Image 1 (cartoon, one colour):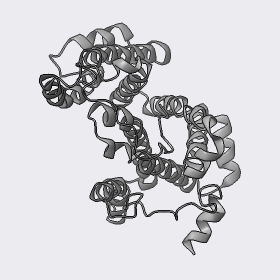
Image 2: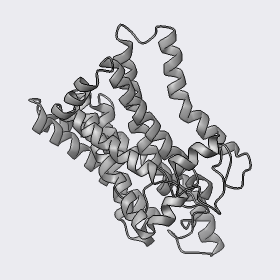
Image 3: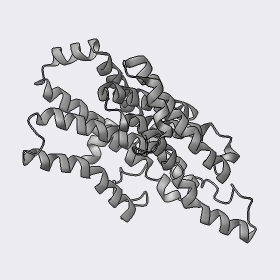
Image 4: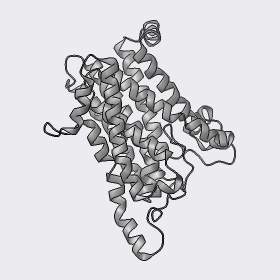
Length: 319
């Protein structure tokens, strides 16, 4: 029965001669994967926690609105995690991480669809009103366009679509970056003056883009990776400044200067810079060991492994 449904939904993926659709906790050889099982459990955990909290009346006086916001937050977080799979897998020389892209991407799409479903529930499933709100309210239009982009990428994330589209598949999946930018913009519009996590998300997205803009030989070089940290912090601070300058009446210059003052805690732009230092620091022992062994030059000691599985996910970076 499941096979029949999947053949109907994804005909290119299950055409003659291809393997059956695998369960998400199994690898492509059909073996149980502890890593995939743990990641799947972590993917389901936010939705499960939200369900339990709702059933115990712990979401406050407006549970539908609280659930809508929480699922939206997790959609953005998971989208950034999905985009981070490629750089992390290559920097850490961990091909097993690269194999998680499809699961994480489709999980992100599932949360985005749940976000839309909760919005429909918040509007009492009045479809004409929902359509009108999406068309007339800019922040809803932005979010809906991002959701449509994720849906297209999720639909074409199968092996069958990769074969059918060929080189066009990679170009199509580069759309994940404008989709992610729209998602973060939607996050800003929804956050209003509570911008801490939105600025952090903008900084991390900037790092994900900057890493891919580096020359191929520099993407694994420790110095280049460490230099991306201040660039990430500056990008996040610039986005924060632009938001306050263009969208609010608050003193954007003073807020920008606050990034240099740690007396009252670190600003999100600084946290973004700190966060992106972690991957090269984790990879540094391996680079040092490889250099001492004389196998490779620094920066290429942890070469990006060729993916053992085809890159695919609703949020697959395609690069």
